[in-house]
Length: 365
Image 1: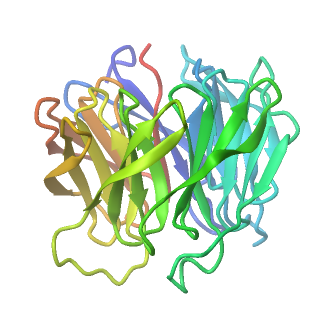
Image 2: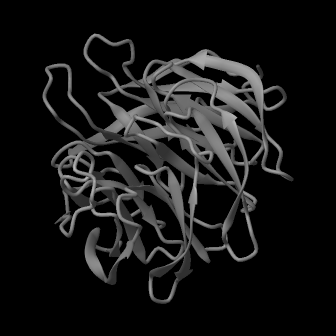
Image 3: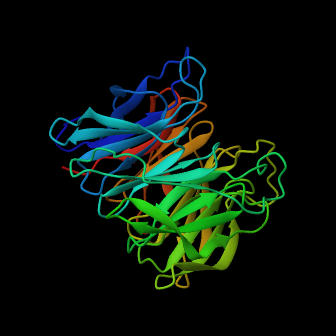
């Protein structure tokens, strides 16, 4: 496919000892057909399980979690410079985060990086230099509070993701163990975080919040709950930095039972703001929701994900394609998106990528 018109996609993976994956891979998508190229290794790095851009797209950050080749639980954040002409990554620097970095995000100014540690139960923040290098850790906040009712999954705090508010004033950290999304005030000048008041948004007991997204207009906040496979929709008060629950809706078909404790995994909002998508592990599907005028959601369809354990997916910047990483079937699958209805059409195109768990589109050239 012509490089000038193809869409470049980065893929984060697990790199277990004895496994086939070695780090961050790239594939290209043909915007005429949805055809995916063979995967190419761009950066050899341990367990780059989540990827995030600096706002200018000149630096890519990877968070590492899980055991290294020696079986030790390690982790940190790694910065790579990105060359838009060649599509290549080059190592910039790395910082230990105090444990495995499950998820990470930069603030809107590109001056700080926030990471969360699922097993360690804490959120950390780092200043970023002008060239994107990660500075020494400036903040570390241990999570605490009443635990959810699940003795298996909610035995301690488990921060799972961080989302920056549209006005760049707050970082919201979904904690699966606490059934809360904790709120922190950002200080990009120093790279630090401080607890906000109100301190959190509560989700129903036993839901286990995992990933979150704001609506495109910033008026609503969508919380994807892993344990029960649901979305908590909140009205968002930007002045107060607070969310008020409006709706709790399942991402699974009525009556569906799954024994796997891992259920909902990722949530994305279509670029046109009219649709919300989530992935369901166990049911092995992508759920499509239409956004109503009051911010609530209505299920449009459930589409098979084309593999097993759809850990992560992303929509292309133009909203015409959805690419899903299926961790347990080691494949990445492309779907065509109808921007008018939100519906997905399988393209029949897939590519093998071992232990793929994160999908990130590069900006269009």
